[in-house]
Amino acid sequence: MRDPCDHFTIDLIGGIRAKPGRKPLGERAMTPAERKRRSRELRRNRLQELSVTVELSRDAQKALDKMIEWWGVSKKEAINRAMLIACQSQTGRTASLFEFELEPPASRRKSRRHKA
Image (cartoon, rainbow, N blue to C red; front, side, top):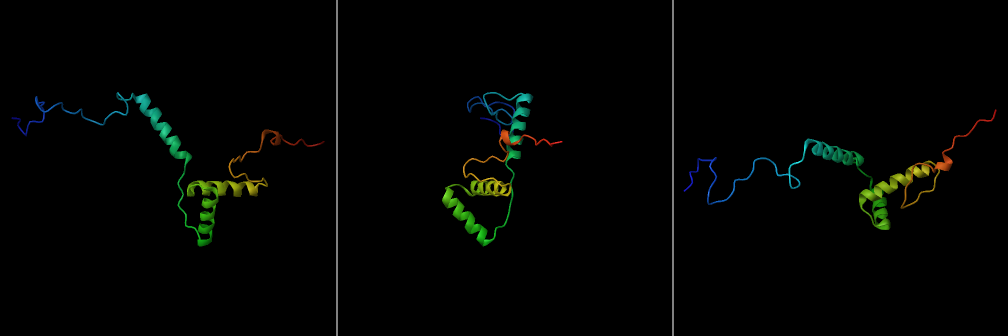
């Protein structure tokens, strides 16, 4: 019989005592360099998608619902597309619904030379 106050002696019949600490993600514990690399990658991924909370008017909500129905996408994707289309229309470019490119093509980026 095992003494309930004894937390140090391994039970010979009951099995193995679990290792202290958090379980490793793989087969072994990560090295400090691997942990830091993973931390930096997770931080980069979090920074790429920023969270914004807004309240929409009823008309804007109806328009968003129509876009979701037309495009067959999630609210997030519909808002992303609508914002990019609005930005492109302000810059005088025709919006494409499926491929977005905010930077002008390389051929249009050439600087204009002033005639002397």
